[in-house]
Length: 138
Image 1 (tube, rainbow, N blue to C red):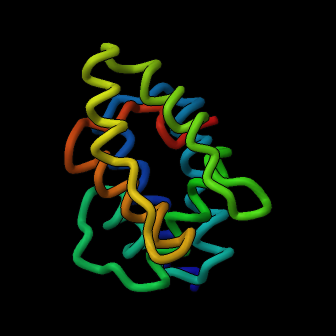
Image 2 (image 1 turned 180 degrees about the vertical axis):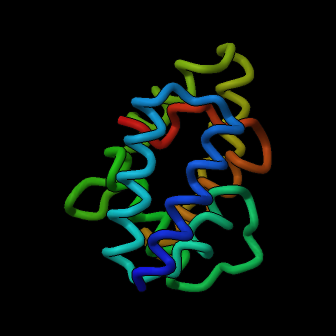
Image 3 (image 1 turned 30 degrees about the horizontal axis):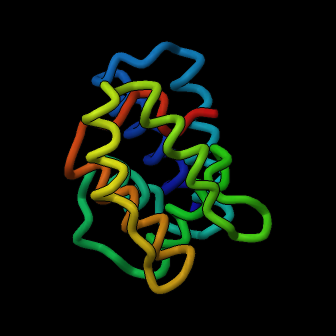
């Protein structure tokens, strides 16, 4: 487990450096990833694969990780309710209104459970638009 955390940290640094996020956002995302890797038990490399857009693994472990990431940034509350108004606001901060509305409509997905919903929404946004650099930051 210690090794997967170290791998996750190293890979995440590489990912966020490529995206040129400000250091405070990189630190916040790293903290979210570390917390969710620890909470869900997912190997760090699997967590980073999904964050980078590799959706081949759609296991319950990966879906729990995505739910955790959504919780970390406040898109899902402690009652496991999706706070779509906050998610929509984050998208609208970064896109033109028409483009945001189209993406929101396309990605308003309800999965089999809250874990699947978080996974499907993230996947949809990732595949249909460049995610805003601060998407997973409060």
